[in-house]
Image (cartoon, rainbow, N blue to C red):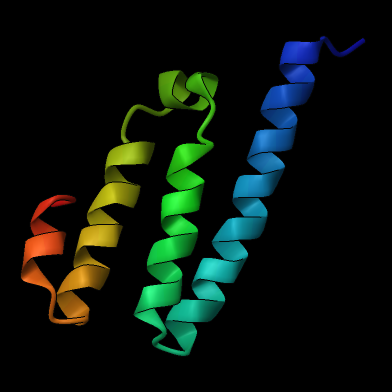
Length: 82
């Protein structure tokens, strides 16, 4: 039987997976601004348990956001994430 915490974690991971697909589609179109917004939304919902299991997950997402800002020619915003 799943606990509320397990359900919350599962829901968050499924939402992250859906957002990852959307971000991938945006990068395929080279729509860096949309990809940034999707990744920012993803970072905001990363469950604590996922950070504990994979401590490099969030920093890699933040670095990717910074890289996309660089592609948009916005180095000041990029510095916040790199």
